[in-house]
Length: 435
Figure 1 (tube, rainbow, N blue to C red):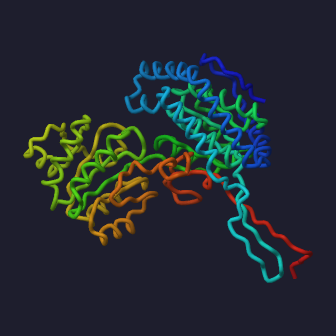
Figure 2: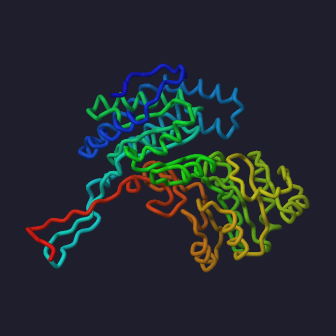
Figure 3: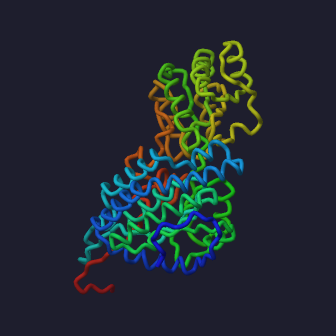
């Protein structure tokens, strides 16, 4: 059984036996599958209480991670993702309580029918079993995953980035202590805190114990998982997100939407990366957009036509020529690509070429253009007259998310509770035999 007391923040690498960890996770998942909704909710509320009670210790551990990350040259975007201050810890606790309040999908009958032979056939939601998640400098993900997996009766094996080791140790200690207090096996949530990258490759081949693997990181991690995993993989989280300003757009409203999509939290996957503007309104739309973004220090990487418009308008925005690869960048910072297009068809073609199928939006008052955009943009989330920042488990009413899937099998978009379940067929008979 994993020790549930608060660990030291010393980062000496322990010896990690993933086979033993997987075996313990499988045993814990079998206990979780037998728990009722209220038992799981009691554990979740205990975790929320524990996070609040241990906020000082968690902040102290996180400060060490942030200081080490700053010394190692982490970008401002990564440091923002890494930060856990009192406000964010309180928000994490609130999110865990929200998960406790959500409907439990486990045990719910999806459908039932009676076959001609009299067998009553039921399709019922059940846990996946053991979920492995690999992620980088996002300690809040530790709590999100643990709470969603617990609610759905899944054990979890977490592998956060080396930048978050102290924070994750403190968080997992709180979680495991809360589980133990409420009679849930603490091995239901385990963390690999050894920084040895070889352990990631070992985790990818732990198919005897792990049922699903979710990598939350860059393209390199996704490719590694696709190539080497013997476990089913759900990829996502990389978002090159677009907003297209159509010629019929309400330009005053467009400025607000674009500012929100780019500035509200630029370091996340659903933040705006590329702005496309219809040529018919570019000269009118671009200067006020640039002025608003300049107030937040956004650097604009503009194509020649957009750059000429902004130069002539004399805005205070920092404008640089768009580079060859700038429209294939997930900026995760206060940088925005801008391109002027002929119209809807060219905007759609640009998005189809450069999108990672995460979140894309059209600003328009033309219902036919809106419908065409929704029909032809094949992304996990497509918006009309709204910010891309809404692609999030909390904003979608899912409570939290384990990832944002940009693939199409099993789950797509923010993965909440239902996406962490599968189903089984149940046949209730009265002695029927097949002829």
